[in-house]
Image 1: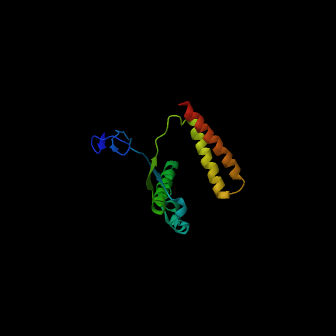
Image 2 (image 1 turned 90 degrees about the vertical axis):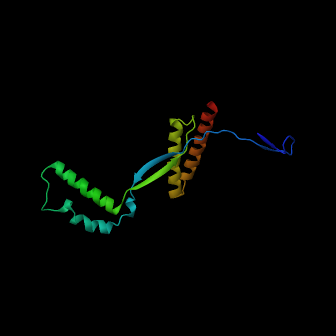
Length: 145
């Protein structure tokens, strides 16, 4: 601990100190996704009939070959029209009292919020009542630890 000016301790002195805190690294969850809504459907419809999947001259003889052809062709088309995006999503550390009930309430709250934001009708009342219940549960769980 440092005191400025040195040797003087009063209510006008400037005090410096260091607190050793151990911070944990952020949790980053990697996920892969495709943007299916941005596919050019007209271009996809023109490419699909020319693929091996629709080639009458090259018909597979077994169900496994059919499945392999289907999987291979559609994966190639998906990679072409909707490439895989790798996203890292940061998650905050959880507190001890965040149990399964709190997780369930949180997800239900987000669902109701999305419904309200889409419609902006009487669903608002259901969402507000659910939020009140969720926060009361959080408070009770927090006080018990």
